[in-house]
Every structure is written in structure tokens, then in C-alpha cells.
Image (cartoon, rainbow, N blue to C red; front, side, top):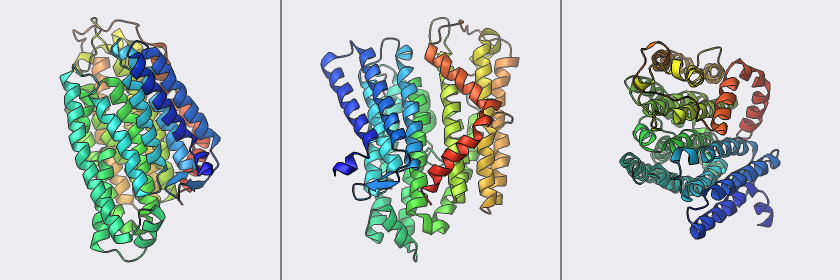
Length: 477
């Protein structure tokens, strides 16, 4: 037991740090929000340092229920980085209205996501997922005086409970027909003949996980929650939980269901194509920038699933690279949205109101253009590279029709990104004023760094990314 505890320092640090922040908030109230913010940031930094210190160790703990490996470490670093940024940007957005619960909830959500990324058992999978979800439901409805935020939290809770029920039903079927909840034990049974019970178990588990990554047809919560939740929370939802859920789905599919490739591959292909197409088409008529980014998220999940559908180490490597590039691009895009404020300090979310933004805030318009062109996968921006990798993995896995369909659908998706850029640069100025300045140093720094990295500079890091993703993906094979 002591040896096991020594290998889960990231989780222990988050637990202790979360409890300390919680107790500080309980006894001191909301008077010292800066102190709670600092405490949570130090906790995340220490947890990330612990992950780095454990790199190179490939083992399991607690009777094989949790894995300590490079795959989980890769996902945790992305999760902690996104959580760090979302805590930093929150006070300025809430303008004095941020409460002590916010950093505490983010810490416990990050703890749950870390458990998700490292799970090697259906029970730990569910514990991590629910720990993240319970914090997320509260975060979505964090602004109690805002009807949209309350509605977002309620919708997320109701639909999340439905998805959890489907996942639990699938877990019970897999346990009932395999006699184990361990991924390795499930894979051993699935290597034999499949019966109807096992097939239904696979379907329900993937359906429950599909909700967490907002894949079609389990995407219905995403646009409403993204629009209604406070923008720092939406930024959080679009990055950290997406990484955790995608990492979890990858581990479940490859580790637990790997031998039953004929059963799960068809489901993943359907989820992929449906997400790419609906994400592209659904975004075209949107007038709210946060709803559009929600459909963009759905669309990009579809491309990640192309790499997962390949079922190969190359496919998993492409998924990990895609997650990293997607997270940085999405963080940058939402940070630009946070800075879109009118003369009265109110956040502007209407897309038509962005007309003429290039003349009023040329820096923000240029950064948003970089992020949108990157999300569309238009070369020479670095967002093209992960799309190329997932298509290459699909072709090498003899999934040429899937790759072709993805390429064609990506052209449709590029339309709504370009339409917004056209609005910012070529439409007549709207009546909305965007005062210059006012951006926080951290926000400006992250926007600038992300935009520069997504330019051609990102290609310089391809060798390092290839080594990192290859070492992480090799763990599952």
C-alpha cells in the first residue's frame, strides 16, 4: 500500500490541495479569493511536477485498478495546464464576483480527470468520471443570478445522469458476461467468441463515453451548456474534460476492447462521421460565438475519432497530437472571446457584432483568425498537421473511405470559420464598440504564445511531439 501511494503523488497532491482550499474558503469566506486562487495554482503546478517526475515508470497500483504510465502522464499534463489557465482567467471575468468554490471545484474536477486518464478498471473509471462530473455540474451553474447559467447546469446534470446510467448499464453487462471489471480480464474474454450480451455492453459503454466527449448523437447538451455557462467555465469544459474523456475512451477501446475490434470499430466510425458532419453543418447558422465553438468542438472530436477508429499505435499517436494542438487552439480562441467586451464592460457573444473588429481591435482579430484557420486545418498553420496525422493513420489502417469522408467534410467545416473571419475583416462596422486595452497580462500572453505556436513555428516541434506521443501511445500496445 505504501509503495502504491508513492506512485500516485499527483492525485494525492490534488486531494490535499483541494481540501486545503476548501477549508480556507469555509472558514474565511469569499474575502480572500486571491489566496484560494494562489493555493489552487500551486497545487496544480506541484501535481504537474509530480507527473513529470514519474515519467518513465510503467506499472499499475492498487491491484491493477490504476495505471502509472506515459499515456496517463501525457493526458494529465494537458489537463492540469488547461485547469491552471482557467483558474487564472476567472477573477477578471467575474469582476469581484468569483467565490471560493470555483478553484476548489476545478481542483476536484482535475483530480477526477486524472483518475479517468489512468483507469485500468471499470470501477475506477466510473469513480473518476463522476468526481469530474459532479464538479462540472456545479461549475456550469456557477453564476446563480444568471438564468442561462442555471439552465446550463440543469441540462448538463439531467443529461449527464442519463449518460451515467447508460454507462453503468454497459459496465454491468460487461461485468456480468466477463466476470471481471479489470481491463486486461475483459480483453481476454473479448478475444474469444462474442455473444449478444457482450456486444450490448460494448455499445452502452461507448454510448456513455460518447456523451462525455460530446460525440453525435450524444452531443445535445454541448451548445446549450457552452453558451449558458460562464466563459471561463466554458473554456474549461472545452479543454480539460475533453482531453480526459478522449484519453479514457482511447484506453477503454484499446486496452479493454482491443480484441473485439470488429464490434467497436463500427461504432467509432459512426460516431466520427456523424460528429464531423453535424458539427460542420450545425455551426453554419449560429449567431453566438460560444455556440459556434461548441459545434466546432463536436466537429473536432469527430476527427480525433478517425485516428482512434484505426485501432493502431499510429492512430493513438495521432489522437494524442490532435488533443495537444486542439487544446491550445481552443484555449486561445476562448481567451479572445473573454476579451470581447463593449464600452460598458459587457461580454459580446453575438457574431454579427464582431463586424469591423479588425479595425477596432486588430490584434484580437488577427489572433482569432489564426485560431479559426487552425481549427479548420488550413495549411500552413499548425492545425493542419494533426488532421493530416489522423487521415494518414486511417489510410494505413485500410480505412480509406473514412479518411476521404473526413477530408470532404473538413471542407464544409472550413466554411463557418472563414465566414467569421470575413465578418471581422470585410463587413461594415457594427454599432458595438470594443475599447482598446483592458486585457490581463496572462490572457494576452497565452493568446500570443498560442497564436505563434500555431503558426509555422509549431512545425519545428514535430520531432519532439512525435517522440512524446509515440512513447505515450506505445503503453497501450
